[in-house]
Image (cartoon, rainbow, N blue to C red; front, top):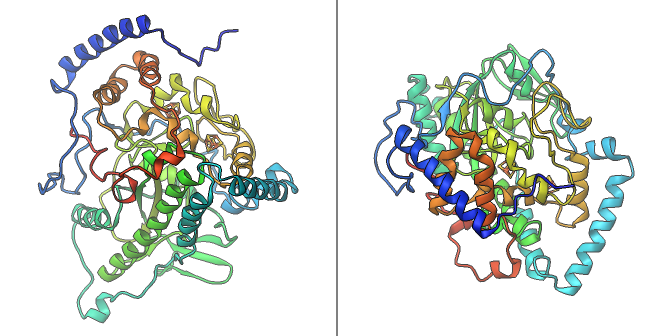
Amino acid sequence: MEDKTKRKLSRREFLRLAGLGLGTAAVATTAAAPQSAPAARKMSKAEFSDPAGRPKRPWWVKTVDEPTTEIDYNVYERFSEQTVTVRGPGLGIHGGADLPGQLAESGAKLKAERLANGTPGYSHKDQAIYNAQMWDLRGETYFLGPQKADTPETLGVPKWTGTPEEAAKMLRAAMRHFGAATVTIHKLTDDTRKFIYSHDPDGKELIFTDEEQAYEDENARYIPKKCEWVVCYAMQMSAETLRRSPTHTACQTTLATYGRSRRTQGVTQEFLRGLGYQALGEASINALAVTPAYAVLSGMGEMGRMNRVITPEYGPMVRIFKIITDLPLAEDKPIDAGIMEFCKSCKKCAEACPSGALSFEDEPTWQIAGGWNVPGHKAWFEDAVKCMTYWNGTSTNNCTICFAVCPFSKEDKAWIHDWVRFGIATMPALDGFYRSMDDAFGYGVQADPEEWWNLDLPEYGFSTDASVLEG
Ligand code: SF4
Ligand code: SF4
């Protein structure tokens, strides 16, 4: 039977389609867009024209009232991060009590073999760089923040006040300087408060309170209802590095991003404290709330087939985090950039996934794949036990092949990329064609891990300017 998910083009077919597709795209561009493809934004000292400091986005990113992910708040319920996801004890709950131990044993054996053999991507130096990044993750991170910086009381000044737009603009400026690639804001409602976990990864309950001040004790963390603003921030990963997934060489960039996020969270908490406001953060990795939900509600990106957020500016090459504050902020709307629509015909991540964890269904569904998913939203639900089994069994405890092959992951500014990105936002019928072009240009092919050590990459392995496009 023909595999409809594979689209291998002959040279003749490709050239024919290229002529057809680009011709059609050009017509659309003439009708609805600037005359030339968007170009990379250069370093600029221009001031934001938006009163809330929202950066100009590509013109094909539309703000909408409802996110492209459908949500049924009558069904969706708060859940425990500790027992429902497979990042902790949930793996044993969903995959069988013996599974974590078996994977730890087989992963350690494989790791030792590769170390002894000097396997590229898993050799001594590769494991050393991975372990170094892992060390950085052991630093402390706090629900209530470090609480060291001066407050308005200790400075002898009133708390900072301004309009929600002024506050959002100020916070964006600060967080960009702290390392955030993008910052988007959602104002909580009774419905969207459900995306705050019932329990953190360490088992502490998260409880909403009418009290003024957040606090925590041995059993719980208390979130004042007046803390209504969720600030989502994205931290870039190195796409060039992740092209070597799932090796240690590649996956260390993921760890690096988590490490940098901890500092960004801490200094943002101290910044808000200095202004006289509360800032509640992650007490450990992936704590506090379902970040992708708030990232989608606030327009940072859309959910894709890999069941992760894909941003227009950086694709999936980010890790996303959140802080909840009582500083009133101008909120942001969801977006539709054609990303979820593109995923319906792309399926590149599902084809590349070595564990078969990702869905090949054309449409997202309300039907969850297992107890690790939470019903009440429409998605391409993944088999998280298969994914985590591969992670732990590969000895890197990580993977992200799906991120690396995604057509939205390019950092370069090749013309094809820009054409693709505005074409998919306007003409879903061409999505299959663009996916074919992505294949034909050789994107998504995994790179040599040994070569990585010879590359002249910028700081952190990514450009802070390269992925931002003019509107
Ligand atoms: S991280 Fe790896 S195993 Fe998991 S879904 Fe992505 S490609 Fe598959
Ligand atoms: S690889 Fe394709 S299907 Fe998968 S998330 Fe990226 S665009 Fe969507």
